[in-house]
Length: 196
Image 1 (cartoon, rainbow, N blue to C red):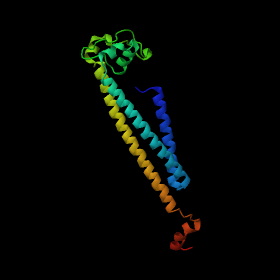
Image 2 (cartoon, rainbow, N blue to C red; image 1 turned 90 degrees about the vertical axis):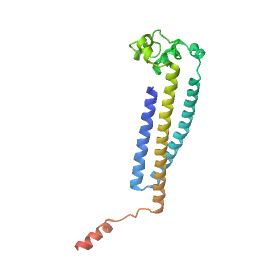
Image 3 (cartoon, rainbow, N blue to C red; image 1 turned 90 degrees about the horizontal axis):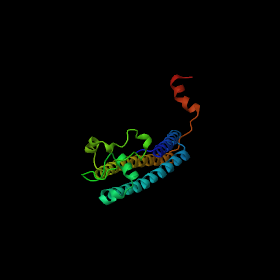
Image 4 (cartoon, rainbow, N blue to C red; image 1 turned 135 degrees about the vertical axis):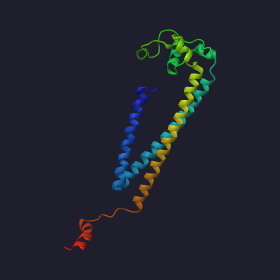
């Protein structure tokens, strides 16, 4: 589920990336060493942060998957009605195991403002077509882990490419500074060809 906090975080990170890209583009066009160095260090920092946070997130997600996969009927029974309703809503499931036992069938407790139709686990057709919460949760975690891993890998590759490109530009700027040409130098070939 994408919450408001996650959306704000994505907008913030996207804004920072946009500003950094503009700084990098300006530095590349003007070949100013300070601008390029600032871009290089900012991208290097962001790349390191993405790698560290991504690894921590994937490890936690893997631990959650193992915990969910090892859930027993006694664990499901020990959950409060609110927790059962929350899990049933998030994973679109009902109850535990192949018999879908101990499904929460009371009034909506989790996020009632968004669930105007009530508790779907009261509908026998919905119960028959939905997975049980053990398999539904495990499937969700596996899918989320795969998508997160792929997104993490793509983001890491993009950031490493940016770091490499900015480092190349910085070293190129140091090795071959731009010659400041005067207007007369630029006009000289034209004047030689056409006479004055």
